[in-house]
Image (cartoon, rainbow, N blue to C red; front, side, top):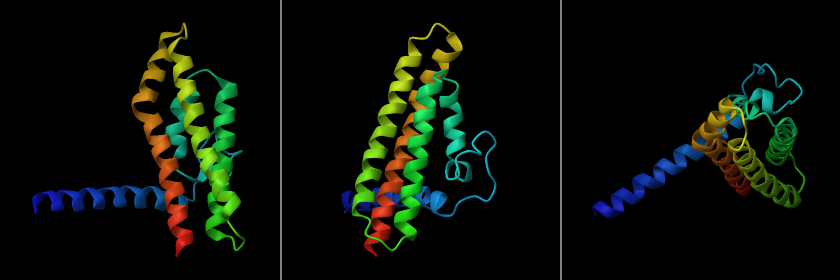
Length: 152
């Protein structure tokens, strides 16, 4: 009985986490974040708080790639949830982008660990422990919620 209750409570916790992540993206904030004005979708979400730490890793090319992939991911999520066309190909692209975002963010952290600047190394360790997991989990949650949204 207790095992069943524990299982149910853990499922409720997962569903609540997924729901909160999805609601943050679906119900975009009205104010835009400073420094991300060029990115329509990123600037209206809570991602800039997470991305600011990645900006400190001193890899501008990789950071720009990460921003472009995340913007495309959010754009596809919006098109799938609000569009009337068949989302099959877009869902495939979203899955690929989610994996690529996680891979690129991980690579940024790994490369920054070997930097000569100690501040950058500290940023890399912080990113690996906190922001990296938050970024990848949020992307996964958005993808799952988009899938659930179109299943209705």
